[in-house]
Amino acid sequence: MTNITDEWDKRISKFLVGKVIKESRYLSGEEMKDMGGGYWDKTPIIIIFTDGSWILPMQDDEGNDGGAMCTSDQKNLPIIPVC
Image (cartoon, rainbow, N blue to C red):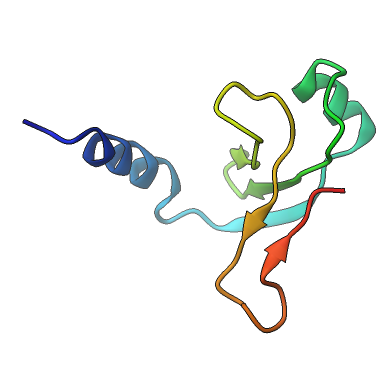
């Protein structure tokens, strides 16, 4: 039997592996309205790839608000905060 995380690993890898980051920035006010339906209080970053796809952190899997990200650069950028 396949573990649910194995299935998600495959889907995530298929989406992310090999992509090149074109841009990273905080969402604009207009994007916040579009993404959060006008209800988000926390502005997350968005990472845009050269193929036009993107990812952004959310508070939960229901998309209730923007979220922070933890990084491997514990000295200079341990957390990418929401604003």
